[in-house]
Image (cartoon, rainbow, N blue to C red; front, side):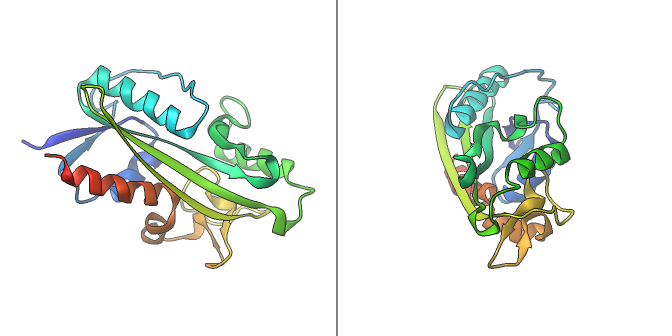
Length: 198
């Protein structure tokens, strides 16, 4: 019987991305909804790593399964690293991806294009039911453009631009995104780790 790895999210976009990113691991990926787990975890950390740890440990304890949680977000240099850990809540509770993009662009309207440098960061925490935890992280650099472009991805992907590729994150095919994105880089570390676990 194959072992289960719980993804500590019910965000469908993230679940699909992880199913693609974690191919080849010796575990079946399951979601809290599939396991009948209803758990709302307060993300009280002040860093991506703290939030990933909090989520992974809470779900591992509740499910008694090895659990993978990530916390990720966008850091814009001209905004002193905002939205950072508040990336999903930046435009207020209940805001859509489009609302968040619009809100961020409104804050950058007076910033010159070349000064709109930004970074996507991702920290993955893998928690074991015994309380042990492993951390993997990834980062990618780009610029924030003034108009959303592309249909792929979610969140801030349509305005995160890679000058060397002349494309936004939302214009990249999944294969390219998985190789160069912050979550892709963190997941590559996680795959190596998970393949070593017996």
